[in-house]
Length: 427
View: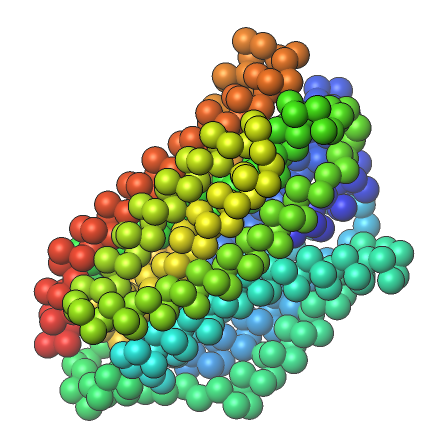
């Protein structure tokens, strides 16, 4: 996560960029550009791997994707600063490799387990997102400090990736599609890709839950980029920090926010799985209803961030902690909803297009949109520290409204969930 900043600090961009913008803006531009390249390549590749995952050996595709992105990451550590465009290309290739893993892995879990057990196993799988992010900060920073060179942060992780790829090839089974649902012998012949897409477009539970997932992605993408800066501006307003005019500002807010995100991700996934398991004893619509309630509750605490941040940074962190925990409650549950309403021979395609939609409507554009709104509001009083803080806060207020919209999509999912589940079982 920190590597784009380190790389951009060491990169000679064109003279035109240096003449038009300050060095700090160049670093932010570089970071955003690398992230955009990664997300775009991930989005484009996901439907392709979804198609392959529904028709060929998933274990081989999965492990090859891991080998591919690990090798590309290792090779990118030897790219000199004169070939920045080559590093950008490598980020795109890493996105392609990672899309193979993200599109196929949940479908293997879906064919190994069912009911409450599947929910728990998907929860364990999705724990890797916050846990991996936290370990990435630690491992990358430790490797850089130990070697005195940030390139080594790119040389350690490929070893772990290649090891994981071999472990998958050796020990992970590739179960027959639908075997956990006891449908293996009754699934009809595989349909065409066009037929699969038409069926998914008509599946209302899948469409609404995918739109809700995009709302989560929108908020988390914007928060990851802008919340640390917002909290730093709050410190400046409170006069507990000096306004930063250097190329790279020193602030603990990024690391604290990263740590909170890791912890809340872990808590959210675990609490979501346990809550859903309990609620299923009361209603069969428990999955989408738990997601809807958690998102609506999250919106309340995220709104409170922008109310209390001006007076109390600690209070803002408390609101972030509760809001993110509630927001991350639905990570594993959303994947479980998909497993219930989509037949096994279409699940890889469904996961891939849900990921595509989440990025396209979510974090691919939300950081830029928030920055655009903030800059437009800030133009009136550009020299005012208070207005710089308020303008970013007003822009970020778009996130809780999007989260509420996501909660409404989950409520719509609850309306059609049982019908779509019955149709999938009948088919």
